[in-house]
View (spheres, helix red, strand yellow):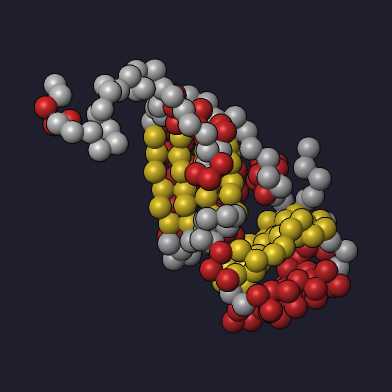
Length: 219
């Protein structure tokens, strides 16, 4: 069960403004500071949560003080439980189901798209990554479910992102390879990924790689 009725994020392109505004947001109303700090592209990201009234008050304080330094923001006053858990870092199992991937150039837009997709369709949110290491300030979300529901979720998210003129990429995998399912279950970060030796893929002929001579003659 979700702890916070409302959550909000504010993304700043200037770190100093982000720190200053976050301080003011915390002083404005009694809220929880889930996380704040620098992310890729020299941005500063603040994620807050709490009661609807308190989060709204702090969020608007951040927008006022942030001014032209704000890259993007989102306020969810009745946050979907899966989005709530995902922004706190919880991941759900990746299964052999139809899968959708949505990549956006800001975090806030991806959170909002996830909220709309989950409330409008019967899909699961596998993972929501928020401008973490090597994402270059981007948001990334992965969904699973029946193919028809996944297609509807992607359409809902895409319509929203297009209306906001947000740069995004979305893809659907109708039936993901078991190796990909296992990898996503472990991590979607290359630096943390483990080697997966798949059946039939490791039986290479000696000398085929690593500068082998005459490799072009192997049938």
